[in-house]
Image (tube, rainbow, N blue to C red):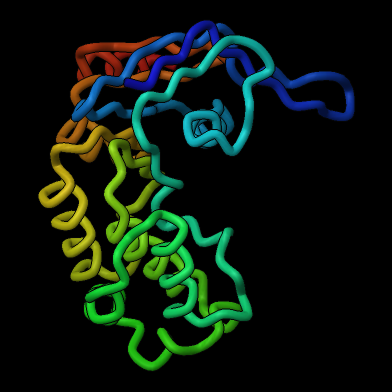
Amino acid sequence: MISFENVSHAYPIKNGINEVLCNLSFKLEKGEKLGIIGKNGTGKSTLLRLVSGVELPKSGHIIRDMSVSWPLAFGGAFQGSLSGLDNTRFICRVYNKSLEGAEQYMQEFTELGKYFYEPVKNYSSGMRAKLAFGISMLVDFDCYLIDEITAVGDATFQHKCDHELFYKKRDSAMIIISHDENVIKEKCDSAILLNNSQGTHYMDVNQAFDVYHTL
């Protein structure tokens, strides 16, 4: 279970404090799929960072009884001087994942070819995203954080990502951010609508979008 209990978060700005989230409460159980919707700047990515533990809330409590992934396709933690293979090996060691078969899986999945053996600092943003998504699939998490993952690669690669995540990992919990309304409606059991630092948890995803369209 992941539980938010009256969680608030804010950032300092030039003329004071920008309150992003105020007294947000919700629970995510094992296997549940939760969509996060809202206009740009309403705190969707901030919410994912709080769930992952990258940032700590200014007030309130976050309880995590599940292992949580980093946001899929996020490659900001890669060591740029190391190759894709070496970064893969490093993550596998950190998460106690067997290296057996990892290189072959990553080569086939990421389609990076010879670049898999080149330093990550030479990668394009798309190549880094493919590497990050592939590594994410190597590690079994109880909950996956997804921030517009369908934007990675071409249609063929997106289909491959969809199969890996929503079929092979279908028993895992997920928190999904997407501007594609159909993705949230198709994949999620419930949704949180963020607006003016407030978050409302709707058990009916269609109802969440009905309210969103009035904003």
